[in-house]
Image (tube, rainbow, N blue to C red; front, top):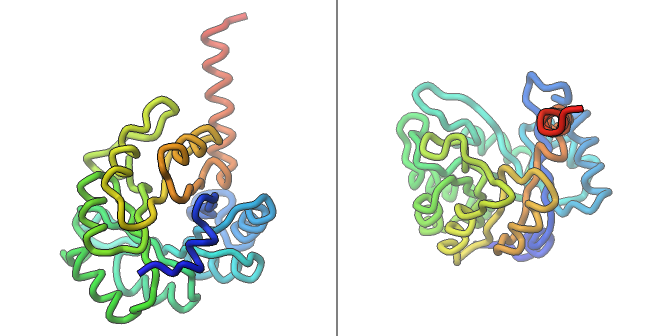
Length: 239
């Protein structure tokens, strides 16, 4: 199930998610490949990339394992991360080292079950490594039973029953609960890791791999965090 050569490279390290949405200033493969190169030079052990052009550009500049994802929208489904076999096939044209997909319990496109989706992938691409992105303990238990190659907490805060919830420096209870039940494959701490202290804390709590995205690769998010902190400081300590 798990390719030791790939996981040996990323276990215990930092994977940087280099993604920018269409409305963001750094959208585009030129910018994302530069971000990936910067992350690699700083010591990242892997890259998450979204879309065919970004993956291709990043592979041309960075010799690190790449986890590929592809966002796409479908009617009557809120799942957008690599939602169908069509996105899997498109990604496979660039041969990423692993593919990440939404494995939450939300309605899938065309009402397809996660189990059927996984069976279709395994039938077509039996050696493909798959990362399941989940939000809850129950989802973690279920996807582990389906024998995904690793499990990520990235969907925490994005689903209806976890909306608005994010990691905070003082509360990692949801990650700890998921860590208790994920015993058969690597667990990826992803989502809401906003500073080095968060990354250190999830490692202490048993994360096998740490993924950081916006806190490294989205300058507008980073800038907003500084401005928010400064505004709090001014309100708490007026001149």
